Image 1 (tube, rainbow, N blue to C red):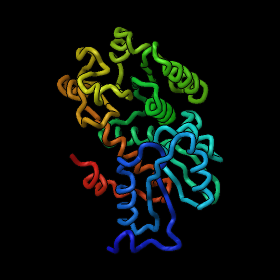
Image 2 (image 1 turned 120 degrees about the vertical axis):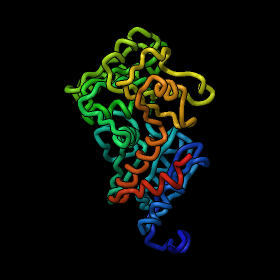
Image 3 (image 1 turned 135 degrees about the vertical axis):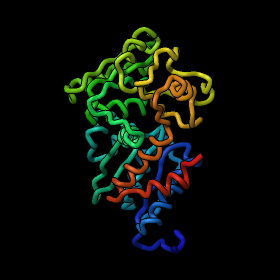
Length: 294
């Protein structure tokens, strides 16, 4: 197979990652490997773009007829305002992580939530008709909650610290779900209310940690304060992927729960963006072995 550099031509379409910082990102390697593997004439780069320059960057990329871009923090909300159209999930989330240039029309998507759902499916858990308890009301948590509601979850109990400014985000998410997806029951509770958490977990099918608890410097902490709240029938998911096994997942395993590590969400949200860009499936097995193995 010819090298990536030799294949660049006047017809090659550009894709990229924008945000700050991006130098650590594995996205260019993952996408370029996949383009080469499938013989697609696309190339993917990363540009360090501050939040205040996000709009100008997207305008410039549009002029250059880029095929699309991924947006990481801190520009996800600003980027949504630059689009001509938003997917239903992106509309309700209020942020995007993927833009696709459809013949000059910029369409914004959020693949974090669909990536999380696909990761659950790959581990044998289908959210349809299930009760989910989700801790966290930041960008990832909101995307997961909206995607889960749109994806057929029966009930979503959201937990966040009432003392946090982000609690209002959760209240707004509950309002949006009730208005736009009325068949899904949504409620929000104070994460510091241990009894409410225990009660909601009693008949839950899955618990998801969508907070930063579990990653350094909080790697010695778990968002579930008492292991006795977990039971073998409960599936436990974590979006934290460094470390691969968080304290939450370790304790969930010891309690007999099926666990879903966060690294798969990272893989599958990228695979969903790849599908949106190319109309083809990313060679996930090869990508997983090459870039996501221990």
